[in-house]
Length: 64
Image (tube, rainbow, N blue to C red; front, side):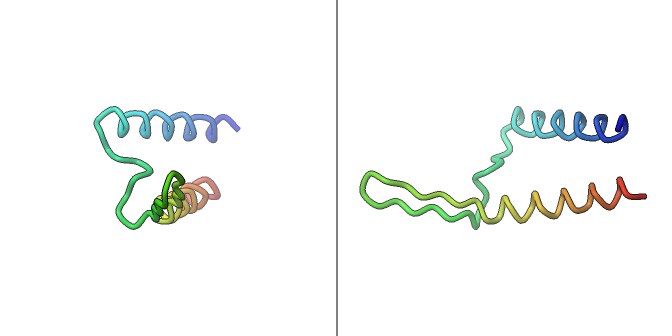
């Protein structure tokens, strides 16, 4: 449990640093944005894929 908390804390700190330095997390090329009139539909497909790959890698590391 302790190892998991340390890794989660480091991930949150890393994401915070990326946002602080201006990396556009959540607005990547390939994310779907549809604007019609006054409504907007936003689906971050590329962001979801990247997060899925990262979480899978973290899961593999934690299983060892």
